[in-house]
Length: 237
Image (cartoon, rainbow, N blue to C red; front, side, top):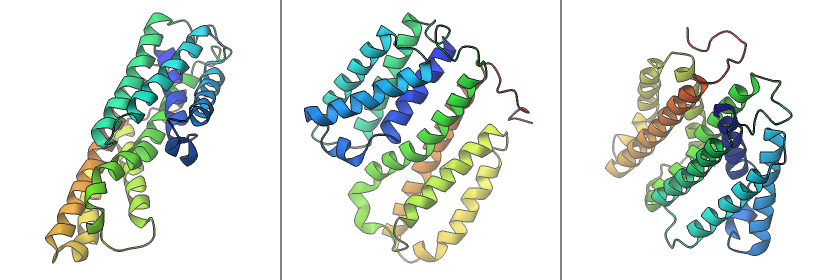
């Protein structure tokens, strides 16, 4: 069951955060965009599972139904995003529970380390790309207070800091997160010392980014702990 869940989870994360184009997002209620996104979801599930099971077709239909419900929500803020992702993950867990042998029946079942690798990929994409989308939704009401800087500089900084937190936790070096916070505080000091609004903007964005990264990293580590190992030296010393 856990191998099946790992593959389904990776397919979902890739479909939603790497292979869903801006056109698909903007035109989600339209049949063409929904069909295109559904084709991506199904193709990734089939490719990563190594089979064309009927359950994957039903999962794709449920994915699109959840997306349609979300598209009808007038205010698409962080809560809507989290509820949407929770519904998707619940659907993945349901299919893995109902059909735990999907992975064993697929082409890649002779690669025992692959589910762990897919879990790492899913975690990294969720923590970076998914986190970026969530933080952007959270901070949108205060976008005018964002400190001036390089074009997309803040987005790239957030992506890198979340990736670093993910790496620190999975390598058993979570204590290094404190040094990361201290370093960012020093570097941002000149931007925030004289402007309370900018200071609060940076603090909210940073704490939210760190919380997301830590949560995803811990969830990834929990799933890895019940999967066959990657066959490389342990991530934790």
